[in-house]
Image: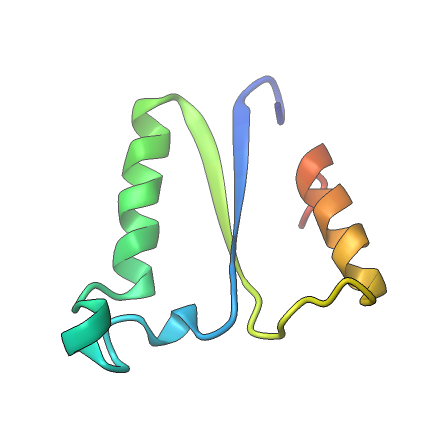
Length: 79
């Protein structure tokens, strides 16, 4: 909950910004923006707030920022 409202943080991983651009014959023509817009519509219908975050650096289990980012996402403090 964030400000009394359901909150969803979507962390888009590596290369998802290339959706619809790279190999559309395999992955389709929808872009990441298209997917995010569909997610925002769904969130609105559920009376939830959604925030999208692009992370193009792969996480590893040894990366200290991974646990920090996941904690921020879980607590709704990712900003």
